[in-house]
Image 1 (tube, rainbow, N blue to C red):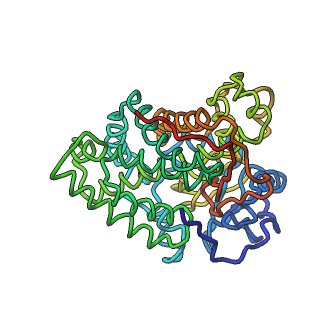
Image 2 (image 1 turned 60 degrees about the vertical axis):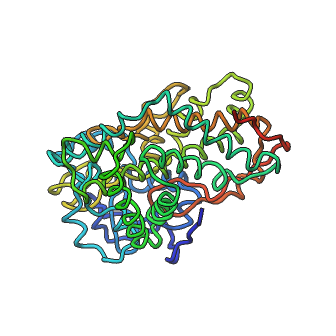
Image 3 (image 1 turned 90 degrees about the horizontal axis):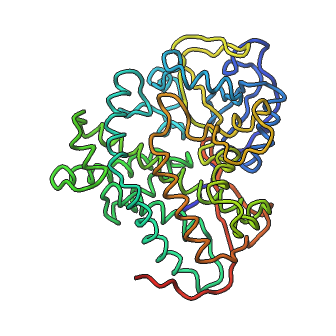
Length: 422
């Protein structure tokens, strides 16, 4: 997978405080840049420093000249996520105020889908989206992942080394999604390239155009030749989605599936390969893959800063005014590590916000967990002596305000014969 480098010059992330009792967005001091390599290299240090200086609400820049507020307090996040009347997800007023070529605009602007709407429009889009998700057979999905995982493992198991980003996690999740939506390999390659550009917020406008053209071809195919897949369910749903609405909901399906699932697989494998609490015990059977997943969903969720809302009017939260029609992002990673809710053994604790909560909570949690857990188990069953090929300090993370994503995950293992695929 192509890795993009930021086109902006990194700025010092902490150099000022907001005006007392004022708006984090309108703060006169410099805001914290979430798009720099400095932030992506050590976001947990950044969240601690944010909390020390600003409390729960943090003035940030998502990109040059795109200010926002980041919520890192768990209780404030719960309040916001459960209050769509005051914190709707519709960005149409806001998006007219940002630079037209902003790299985050394609990722954040309004589309006719459940993610970017509230009220009756949200309910209509979500009904169709959930119907598509509910069509997925979770029992058959395990077999689907296995059939995709084994040939991928066979491409590198005899080599004794691999990059799990490009050789395993990305192609596996990508092919699972393609099969769920009924997509051909050729269209799927175009979709993947466009989606990667969107999440990296580099060449995002090109990414949206490239992605949209490929998905529109898929929609027209399913209108004429429906099948047993998510796209066909969306096309036939009583909500009567038009082509633009179908396109937006498919983009949302890929966006919610490709990057987050890939990152969750990789971040969980990294934990298992480097943390003795998991690496040794888990491979010995004491702890489960699900325990590792839960820990990652708390500490390094694949979408670290997301769930964007835009208050209808100025609103006071935690002694700071949030202005109307300006983005308020929930730091899922920052809130999950809020000292106010931390403490004790959290094995089996799933109170994290990684899936969000409220009316916009992820409806595909069960699907994602099946794909991710099966992908990890298949790999570890095939190559149980796998080890990280370099130190943690040598690993790099892809810059971007939204995701928590490794650039590469190099591993080594004893050279092994190919798996027997029936």
